[in-house]
Amino acid sequence: MGNPLFQNQPQNNGNPVLNMVNSLRSQGTSGAVFNQLYQNNPVAPNGVSFRDLYDKVRNMTPEEAFRQNGLDFNNFRNLKW
Image (cartoon, rainbow, N blue to C red; front, top):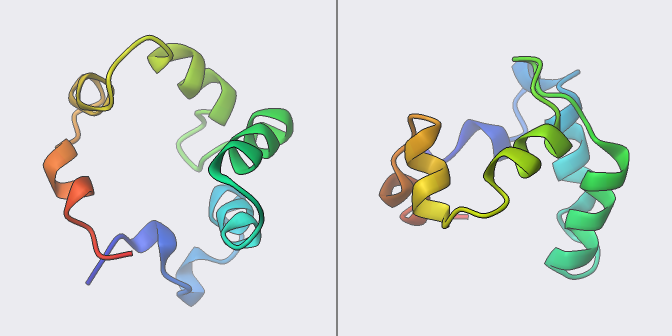
């Protein structure tokens, strides 16, 4: 099924993070996408902004960041993009 954040489903319309990701997916390098997200600082439906999340996990490994937020990094790693 894949990650619903990256699926173009009608129920995701209006999600500012999804809209930002969809518009940036094909643009530039990952660094350029990161800079755009950090500058625009979209807020997820749960109220967490991109910049706040990045600042929270800045010095962590991806595994640590996922674990701290109750996510399984292996599930993310195995997603089919």
